[in-house]
Each structure stands twice: as structure tokens, then as C-alpha cells.
Image 1 (cartoon, rainbow, N blue to C red):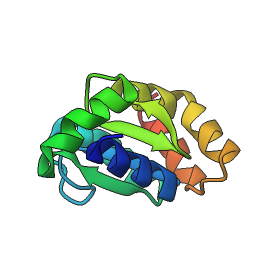
Image 2: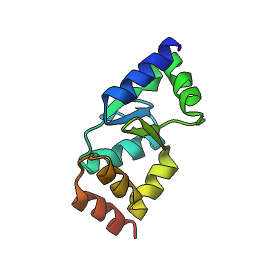
Image 3: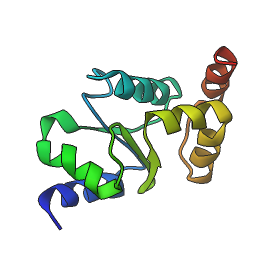
Length: 120
């Protein structure tokens, strides 16, 4: 296992929700990362952020690890969920709520409903 793989595995093992993103949750550095971090922040989800811009090994390593070509990438309870488009779709359909509930991850249900209401 490469050093990057070990760091990625440690991040997704130690944290219930991890977002590999460009920038940080308080200062995203791309629109797609900003959208996903914004949804997670708005829904009050406690998540760990990994800034792929700070480490080229992690930036390429996460793509290889998940076999997914783009960033951001969301992991819940060690499982890869998807990127920006998938998270957006799951949020709007309610699938993200279900995934979080099934995995015992707390979130603000009213905030999730408000996102759907606003985007209906």
C-alpha cells in the first residue's frame, strides 16, 4: 500500500463522513467542492475534509483508490458515495437522508427538506 493509500484508508476509517475536495470545508477552491461542502455544512453533517490541493499524492491517489476520475469525492462509513452530481441528485431525491440514517450519521432533516423545497 502506498503512503497516499494508507493516508486515504486512515481518513475514511477514522471518520464517519469524509469529503476529499479542492480546498477546505470553510474555504472550497472549486465550484463542485463548494457545492458538496455547502450541502454537508447546511445539513449540519459533521465531516472531515481532505484538501487534495495540499498533496499531489492524495490528489491522484484518491482517484485511483475509488476508481473515480473527479474530485470532490464523498465517503460515508468507509464507503465511496460519489462526486458532486451524485451527491446533488441524492440530496434532491432524499437518498442522501436515507444513506445517512442507515449509517447512524446525524444531520438536520429540516435543512435537507428545505434544500429540496427550494430546488423543487
